[in-house]
Length: 242
Image 1 (cartoon, rainbow, N blue to C red):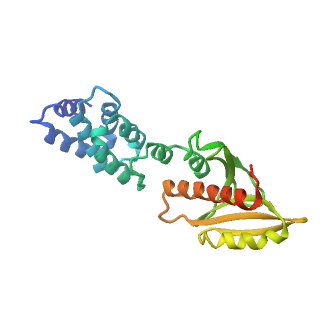
Image 2 (cartoon, rainbow, N blue to C red):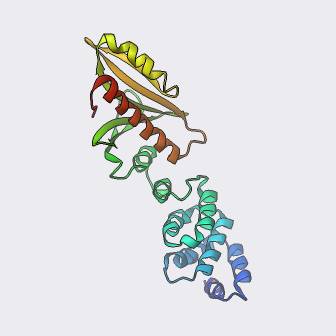
Image 3 (cartoon, helix red, strand yellow):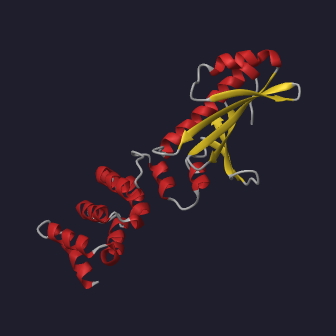
């Protein structure tokens, strides 16, 4: 411990900084990691010392530091480039400078909690997890749509993809053809009409492979499906499905 304290002191001197940083990296996270995290958490720590700590964490690929690195994105704007490189190396994810998405990425909890955490209070009026006996649990997100409207979207994680689903109200049989025409404008979305007593329910589904799909892009897809459904409601069903 005494050696670590001495090396950390040496980080403050440009003459000894490079040697001290190399020795700390050599000691590894088990011996030097916690002391470096304490440095990162102090607003008074000099920027070049913070940079040295970040490069050590990068060298270790130390997952334990991920939450502190996300905090640094906000606190140390001059070091954001190095912080992002280290976060990407530690987590294997890439979210640019979106701090909200990074906080979700490093948070504890299951996949459904992480998906719901993508949305702030202005974007989602409500989020909840639905436990199902028929299939895997899924989450429901009530999106706030421009103009004071809202749209419920459900997200069901499957083994290799996410199934994202919403509805756009009810139509009469003579309107089914107009839905087919509308669907031609959205080749990535499956838009269908399901018989429901004497009406037809307009259903929208999009399946997204999990491989190489970032959380930020998943959020974009969810938002887009809600907006398409809302557009369908306004122009086809005159509904506001909640």
